[in-house]
Length: 93
Image (cartoon, rainbow, N blue to C red; front, side, top):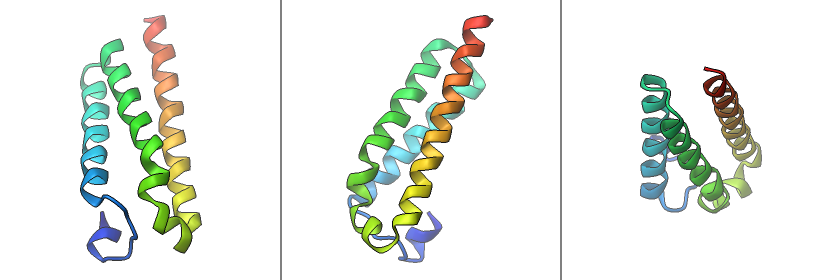
């Protein structure tokens, strides 16, 4: 968000990006508050949507700063790994 405010980020569909970020944040917060299989699936789905659209939304930014886009992709992958871990702990409980 800082980069957007400073106009240092080339981003297609800025409003859709922000809406998707908010949905991911909300689903992760809901999972933290109530760790159910349904909340986990919702978080996984929202994160998957964001990851799928990252390349499209960041097309311009990937030309100017490919490393930044790669880092964001890595962060999303890390969140996916954490969700897989959470899924395993829910199955054991």
